[in-house]
Length: 219
Image 1 (cartoon, rainbow, N blue to C red):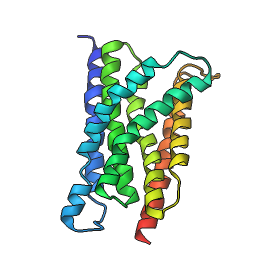
Image 2: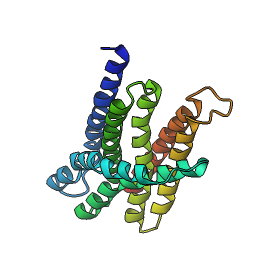
Image 3: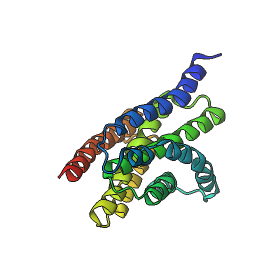
Image 4: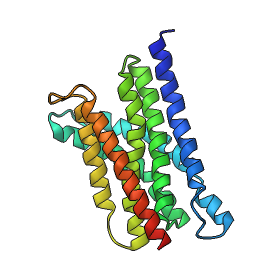
């Protein structure tokens, strides 16, 4: 068995699951805003993770059904479908549970993004085992970090009663589109340079938004 296939298999299975485990443990550090039992139920991220995995199938089916296009607009369109697909399950969970914590909302979105990326990586492994290891490795944290941006905007809208969901979704779509286009158009930058830069930028934005959410909730 080629080492590249083994490496892909480990990335496909381990990276999303390890990140999900870390996110779940991190979520338990958030102080309860209600009773401990409510906190435990509200912070269960597994339904969102599994939901993201399941919703990836119809989302990717929609992507395949879209007519082919050219130019950067195509990457934005594909990114919009994926970001909206990842957001469906956590949005429903937040409303069903009555979640009002921005940080808990962020984690639900991140869990869905990790589930989505797990399905996507399995699909890539079956379809093209020779797919760049670098792209496989960066796609998982990218899905999670962009979902966090979308999750902050949605959680902020519910917590502060100010419409910010559209802005968060648009930011996630824009960054995702640039990431995808970066694999095709290097613009003189070494291959992978643009996508990795977008990943680092997204993670940096996540850190700022998480700090902002904590300050708002602890005020």
